[in-house]
Structure formats: C-alpha cells, structure tokens
Image (cartoon, rainbow, N blue to C red; front, side, top):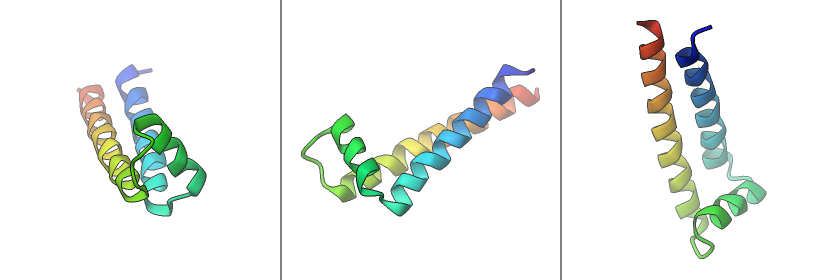
Length: 70
C-alpha cells in the first residue's frame, strides 16, 4: 500500500469534514473551532478559518496523490 495515497485520502476526508463545518455551521462544532483558535472570534471568522484550513489540507492531499502516483 502506498502511504502517500493513504495520506491523500485522509487529507481529502478531513478537508470535506472542515468544509462541512463551514457550510452547515453546526453550533457545537463552530463553538469548538472558536475555543481552539480564539475564544473571542465571531461565528463568521470561525467559518473563514474553516475554509482556509480546509483549502490548505485539500492542497496537501492533492500533492500527496500526485507524489503517490509517481
């Protein structure tokens, strides 16, 4: 089993979960994001943080897929 592809799959799954938090905005998960980053941030800021982290992890997952295909 190629570990790059496995890591790519995990990154894509994590990115999908983070995008879900950003799109659906479940109150409990947004509260957890706010606790982990900064307690005084607004809900909109937490959503933007989710989008940014999701995009970064998705890019890493794509890079891992490309490296695994070599």
